[in-house]
Figure 1 (cartoon, rainbow, N blue to C red):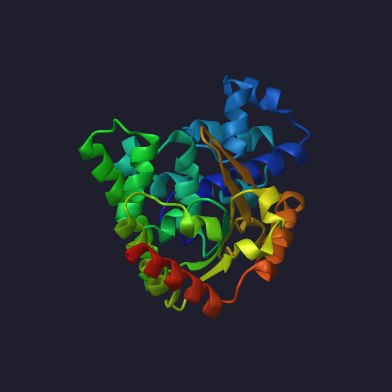
Figure 2 (cartoon, rainbow, N blue to C red):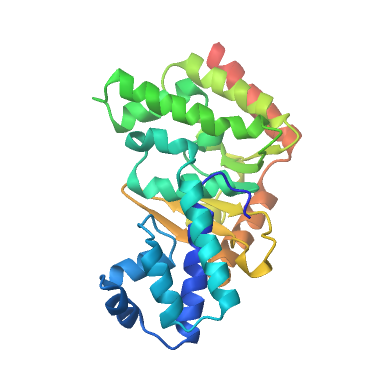
Length: 297
């Protein structure tokens, strides 16, 4: 069984397994779609772990089409059942109206991840934001949003942040921030001052590391990559089913998810290079405190 509280990871495991078996059986996506009497897009969505209805009849038909052994079919059906069971208890589904379609997948991955590494050049990542800072971002993007809707989004944000202090479901957080993130005003000075102090307080948690890339560094590889998040996952009892490391890149109207070794590797390298350019934790704290003091003068 996986340790995730949602269905995202078992869906993705199931999708990778189905794709592996389809290729081994020399069956095209088009042929699999005809067998299920669905569009080829449905097969693609199944194989990439997208949020698609996974009917038992589909799973049974694919097991037969791919000529799976009893053991292989058992593994497929177990993952299918795991995805179905987890789907009913995913905590963030009560906030479906507040989650953009492209962000639902990320929510599942973040919830399942054991470590989170990120580089941000302009905004703080959600897991480090105070509620007031978060409100400013929401109002900037949706100035006419109703107050009740804003507060529901703040509630969702607050629940995500709980993982930083959770003892049952913790996450390791390592974030590299450009100095611009700290100096870009998000609302009144007190909002930013409180946010700076929150960063220092959060950085004292044993599972959190925050470092700053100062303006004095000049150009560095992060100015080329832009913002990104690298998620790593706990091992699955069956090694081949372990969720691969995934790079998440958020855009204005959508997002990209990179999970193949050749696409993830450059971001690991970039993260290491940005880390070398960053101040150490002590110097980062001093800079954050300095900016907080400037805001309160």
